Amino acid sequence: MRLLAIAAGGAAGALLRYTVSGLAYTIFGEDFPWGTLSVNLIGCLLIGFLWQTFENSTLSPQLRALIFVGGLGAFTTFSTYGLESVNLLRDGQMRVAVLNILGSNLLGLVAVFLGMLLARWTAVWGR
Image (cartoon, rainbow, N blue to C red):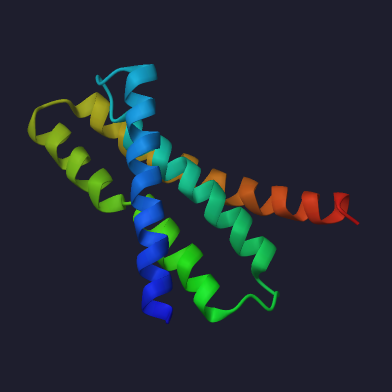
């Protein structure tokens, strides 16, 4: 049952990733890996928020697997980030590669932290 939950979450996460990434490239252009950066930052924000929200809950193992392993696992793919960064370096686009690496890592950590703060704030606000 858990594998089906992961597969369902993975399908949803992959489709959402494709949609968000495509939208980012449509809005911002293709001169920078905007799609991957957007997906990574949104994914970091979501995982921070959802982890904080459900950390001490009685959420079933299947639902946790669907959300965290399947959904967010398929949505945020740092393997793509790595490949794009290496390709940028290989192509001599040092400035863009460094911006991508710093943006994904530093802003990703900030997004996880903000997601956790947002979850705490909404938990207090909802009481």
